[in-house]
Image (cartoon, rainbow, N blue to C red; front, side, top):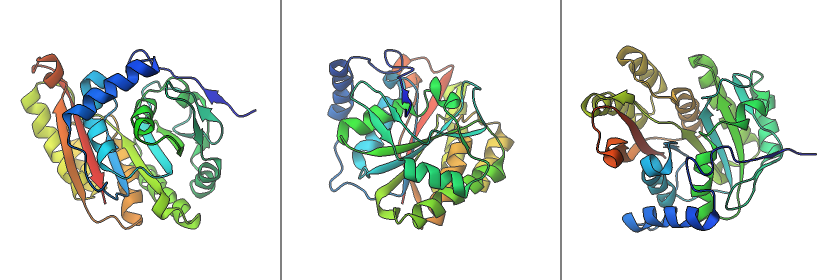
Length: 274
């Protein structure tokens, strides 16, 4: 019997009741001018904090792009559970707006292409980094499938290899036009806003250049506490292999924009890759 993953952070990071969740997202929608036509992108990066902090940044990206029929969402492992590279390869995720099915064919192709990737549910059970993105996509597109990948490793080469495995899987299945790759990451954590913005600007510039090696070196040299650096590397590696030419920062905020406290913030960046 395929597993149904229950929501882990509904009622915490975002509203549990569908009508309240819809109202929350409508508040974001009221604040932005929708893109017309929707942008065709290969990949994007979204933040994954509570919606009151980062939801507007994430929704701005989701509302501007053409949401494809299949998503591959890469998130960092905050819980320490499960394997280092974990994919759920069957079942569905239950969410306030309804269930989203896992694309088993694509997930199992990934398992074939990247032998270090494990079919594992434990890493996903309580992890929020992928879950919080899904209702934003559901609000704008009712029917899509996805593949969730949680990364608990800081091995640059394996993250790069994962990206190449994602690209080759998509190509071999003829899904280039119909698959969106999403990296879930927040930026600098718990520094004063001036410092956070300076560090994040340098990391974002590397992402815009599609240079995962430069991103990795800047994270290490500047001690940037970007939690989804591994997903970002895999996403960039995959997107370039699929023909991406540039990245573009669409929106950046910090938690200080919500709380008013600029002494200790978390940075949130919304970036598209095309």
